[in-house]
Every structure is written in structure tokens, then in C-alpha cells.
Amino acid sequence: MQTLFTNINSLVTVNSNGCLKKCGYEMSDIGEIKDGALLFDDNIIWVGTTDEAKRNIQSGEIKPDKIVDMKGNTILPGFVDSHTHIVFAGDRSNEFAKRLRGATYQEIAAEGGGIIATVNAVRNASIDELVENGFKLAMSALRHGTTAMEIKSGYGLDLKNELKMLQAIKKLKDMVPITLKSTFLGAHDIPPEYQNNRDKYVDLICNEMLTAVAEQNLADYCDAFIDKGYYTIEQGERIFQTALDLGLKLKVHADELADVSAASLAAKMVAVSADHLLFISDKGIEDMKKSGTIATLLPGTAYFIRMPYAPARKMLEEGLAVAIATDCNPGSCFTENMQIILSLAVINMKMTAEEAISAATLNGAAALELSDRMGSLEPGKEANFIVCNTPSYTDIFYHFAVNHVSEVWVKGEKLITN
Figure 1 (cartoon, rainbow, N blue to C red):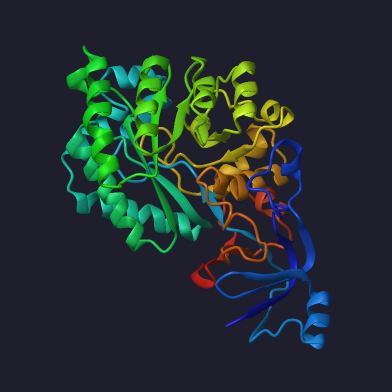
Figure 2 (cartoon, rainbow, N blue to C red):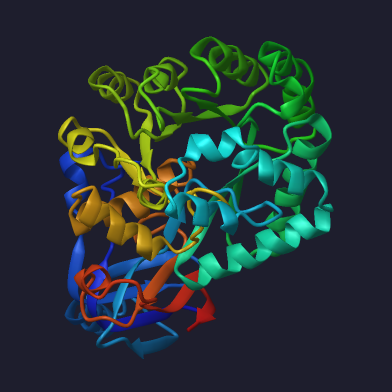
């Protein structure tokens, strides 16, 4: 059935003009149509103004089965959250309280907290418990406008439990009515049993874990935390080359805690994205521009652990493709709400509203290699969009910290009515 929405106050198409991502100044063009109209079934069929729709109906060019007046609303592509850790077990609210009292992320990790605390909880959890927790967060994300997302492993840190996490993600793909991508992050932290022999754990990742992940087709990407106190450039390069040889594509936790040239490594290995980038160097920006690697920025994490924000303006001025994502995880950024991330991006990373929307939709989709079929409202793409009860997209930023999403549509089906 073909449905036509008319009288849309603000129809934000994020038109891509045939490109798979927007770079630099291009991100300011979000293709807004005032008094817009949108014709769709499973896919977008036509977009234009309401007057154009009326003329096309009279001429027989379009023949909608149903017409809905959407006056007073804003419609934009569904958000694509391209970096999350929503499959986990346990609770780390006590660590949050410690940080409020002055403890640093590194100090908490040194005490046995941080990622390792979640590792212990995951190792004691069943696959069904992991699935249940991930399902709740994925559905909450959907209610806040997310229509596709990535989920990482990385809280198992041994063969059995990393596979358990990825199997939980695979189950979620069949349960959640949105597109999910999975990422193997066995190199998230160093497990306690290998703290004194880190290279031996890298051997395990390369010789056993990656092989099993690839053989069982459990991941789309391989990631590693290349940063001060975590994995070195040399270790990362070995892990990434093994992953590439096994047919996995790459993502990189890069330069979050210090500039260790992880962004340049991501560019060298032609990673799909390099994420975090709080301390990226000018050379890292230049290298990523040359390689086409997407800069996925996670302002919620900088906010949550009181770190400097990634230099978004510099990246945009240098012509990088910038995406934004939640990094939803139990320790350093516990939110699945992309609307909050949009707010943080414009206030604390000094992005414009238009740049933030492009980063959360088309470029988020590009960071998951999905932008050929979602991330913008253009004929032929999936009818994945959100209806916001605001007269303009700017109100999403202006009236912050509330859920403006009244409806979520995926492949032409209304999944959520808030």
C-alpha cells in the first residue's frame, strides 16, 4: 500500500545526491522541504512539496492508497547509531558515583573496575540474560528514533565468552525490528589472566578467536582499543591484518585517552571508521581524509567521563565525513538516546544542527556501510523515518532532553507510537 504524507512542516531528506556520505561543508545540506510531502510503501517512492503532490495526483503520476495530513510535524530519517555496547551484564553505577567524587577512568580500572568489572559479570551471565538486556536497550533506542545500530562484543575477553556475546547479538538480529551490525571487540581490554603477558593474549585473538568468529560468521567488523594503557599500534596492526585476511572489515577505538597515532593506523588499514578521536592529531585527520575513513564521534562519552571533546570543527573544516553515535555502554556512557547525542554535538562540539543531523543519519549509515539503502529520504531507499511533534527540526535541539519522537517507521511500517 502506498501512503502519502502531506503538509509536513519540515521534511528533512538529508539528500545525498547519489553519494554514500557527506564530507565537511556538505554536511550542512540536509535538503529540508517546507510544507513537504512523502510517498512511500516499503521504500521511499517520491518526495516533494504538498502542492507538487496535489498536481501529481491530478495528473495520475502518483496514486496513493492513503493520504495523511502531517501538519505541525517534522519528519527526518531514522537515526543510525553506529557505535554501541548494549549487550552486557552487571551494573557499574557505583563507579559513576566514584567519578563524581573525583576518581578517574584509569584509577577505577586500576582498582579492578571499568571494563574488567563488566567482563566478570558477562562471564557469569547466560546468553539469554545478555539477550534480554540487549533487547530492552535496543527497543528503548527505537522509541527514541534509532532505526539501525551496531553492537560490539568486548566484555568476554576469552574465546568462550566473546563467542557467547556475538551469539547473543546474532539472536537479537532476529528479535529486534531494526537493522543490526555486529563487531568483534576481543581487543577491548587486557583480561586479568594476561596482564603480565599481553602479547600472548594478542596471539589468542589472532590464532583462535578471530578464526572462530569468521568461521561462524558472527561479526561484520573487527575493532580494537588502540590507546594509552590498552593496545599498541603494533598489536593493533597485527590484529587488524589477521581480521582483514579472514574477510572482516575494520573499526578502531582510536586516540580516546591520548594521541597514540591510532587514527593514522585506522587510515593505513583503511578502516571503515575510527571512533572516539578525542586526542586525534592533525596528521591523523589528514590521513583519515586521504583514506576516506569516517570519524565517528561520541560526545556522550566525553560528557559522561568529563574528558575533552573531539575536535569536530577542525575535522569538518578539513573535509572529513563525521558521524555521531551514543557509545551506549555500562561504564562510560549509559544512554541509548540519540537525541541527547545531537544536543551534546551542537553545544559541546560546536557542530551546527544541520551537521549533527547529517552525522546521525546518512554518515552514521555510512559508518555501517548501510547508506546505500538508508540514512536519507530519497526514492529507492528504505522508508525508515521518524515523526517528531515539532514544527521544525531546530526544535529538537532547542527543547532538549525530552523525547520529541511521536512515531517511528521502519521499511514503511509504523513500529512505535509514543
